[in-house]
Length: 261
Image (tube, rainbow, N blue to C red; front, side):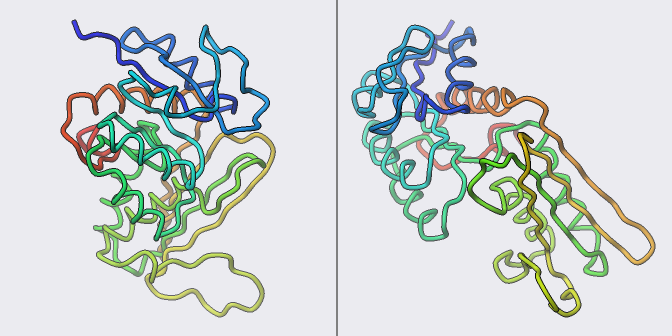
């Protein structure tokens, strides 16, 4: 039997960080090795499941097998430099990366075993696979719209999950999402472009996450929807990814690799 995977949680003082700590500590194949948060956070010095939250990421990661990182693009880039040097597993659920930051991240993580995903839910990743399949089979006479709803605290839009679904739709059609997407319609925008992939974002209350991919034709409409009921599902997926990555060589993976999709 393998030794428990020693995991560290970044941003441990936040809602997602606390959930990650809880799931790691409860998992029989893992151990909560450490936890940290940014300097000045009120959580520094407090305890979570027997572990003290500190502000020194390198100290927290010393002797660990991997890192669970749902923080910010800038923070994830800095953390990637550490995990690349040590060859640790790095699970990245951070969203909101710019294209240049994505490129920097892939460069910085050489040597590490990275799993990065806009969403670690099994259901969402199956939805992504289905979206690609449907987009492959339905022509541009079917309009594609991606609607997403999240809690009022979310800072990026469209969400990482919505963009992941958009990339799947674009891949299915063999187009570049950056050229095909339509966002932020307001005022007299003119008719919808043929083959465009549209996005709409709603922020309200404490919604964990809801995503719908609409394929709208002249006489019929197909809608694929996923609704998250508990934030724990993202933490469960992140832990599953970490356990999978332990046995992989250095590389940049996503949840489709983890799930064999």
